[in-house]
Length: 169
Ligand code: NI
Image (cartoon, rainbow, N blue to C red; front, side):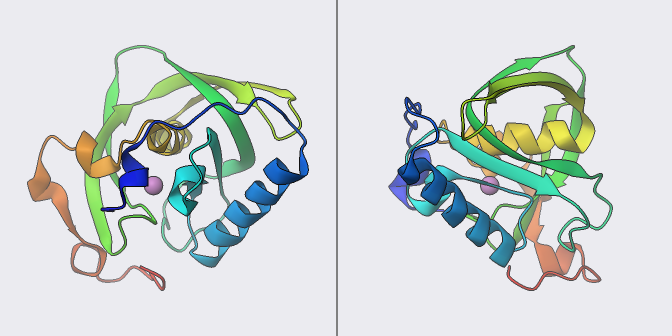
């Protein structure tokens, strides 16, 4: 946080399956796994392209989180379904050491393509919907604290959640 690239609007991908795109996704995967994240957007490694990855199995950063399928999502479009909002705690690899309570739409449809251009079209809710909203926000230069109506609900992870294993941030 503080790097101006995180505040920019990223460009759409025009060509799929290219060595450059596959290498970018490899880089993003390595970074996400190393930092134990639930997701990562290309701008977080300084690449201003509309590429996000996410996926949660059992993640020590989110011990109560539902599983989310391993996904590469390019040029995403989000359509919210219903007006229901849910608050939930979020962290971000670009905002290390902190967690904040962020309102997100509970239910949405998202579309896009994978790294080879195959279409993705899913209706999701809960934590899966939260992760998608968080990661796609990065493509428009939005970090989760900018979505928080109440900054008294922003704090250090180890203070808010003393029992939580959180090695990297
Ligand atoms: Ni993030």
